[in-house]
Length: 432
Image (cartoon, rainbow, N blue to C red; front, top):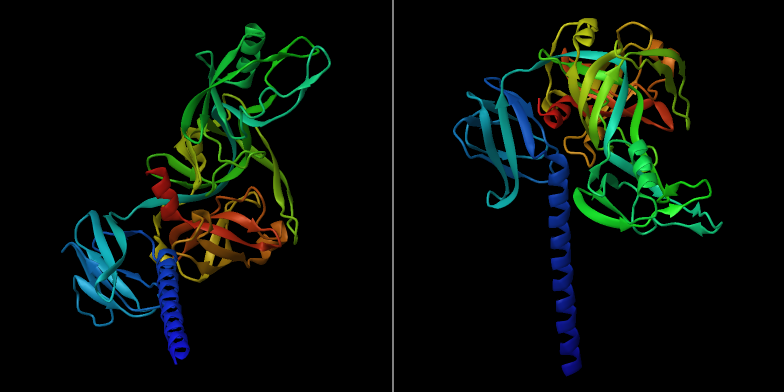
């Protein structure tokens, strides 16, 4: 009997443990869905009722902490607190500009998420779709990697191994600032075999690294590190606002070896000419082939920042005068829906809007540059490029007369499809 009672108690403990495990798993999966489906920040236009729809797996309560933000749903009764049922639309309305907070609660009690609501005036920008040459100068000399070098005595050495890492930036040597890799080479040869103290930036932290250069067969002194101080390429200008601010690409420019977004000291836009297009096919993304004209008279803009969500800066008068078209209202993420839209590009030599289909809208993706999935359906663009090719990143996406996003990446196995970024995400990153 005692053994039977022990077994029953063990079974009950097992059931309780299983129940708690399922509850924790359900709570964890619910929290994950909320994080993915609901953005932490919403932008709305002042004195305009904006509608939202979140695909939630359970009912929640949405509360406004300010009388300025009025909530309403299918009950059509404006309130500071509404009950949201699964996939039920609701709307926000604010009479005055400012930043306000909403709280999302489970059962009206358990706080799931805080949402910041920014209420602002309607914004406008010209969708461009124009190819530009991009040149970026890194902030410091970037370390690509380390390697072995042959010393004067014929033996191999790798002095930088374990001292420098791929993605490091060398800012100075023995206290002397470095502007480019040529300056590093010159200083090392002047310093000779004496110890060199490198000021290195790694992951946002600055540290001092002491190294001893070695003399090579040709008599020069080296650290055994591969370095780079600039990068360049062709991309597409996304928008230009009334103040001459521009955004392009929709993603950052990364170093081809390290894969890291290049931390820049300065950068510039230059005139470019597209010489041909290599059409994309399954497994082989296409590319726009062109030439960048570097020179004082061909510079058309200044790049001020290179970020995960694009490059941003100021356009020169020459570029501003060359951009045609009327400004369009900026559409926020709640304005974007699956269905017909347009991609603006000059791949044909002229500014054209080509039909695309928005197939997926992700409010809160793991990568902001992959908020949209689009498919090219325009026969003319498919005939020219096969879909989306390298160099088209930054091509503006227009829906219902609003500038809502930009193309960012192509699907390698299907060049007719690609990713896009919300326009409001680019503007937030630019601080414009």
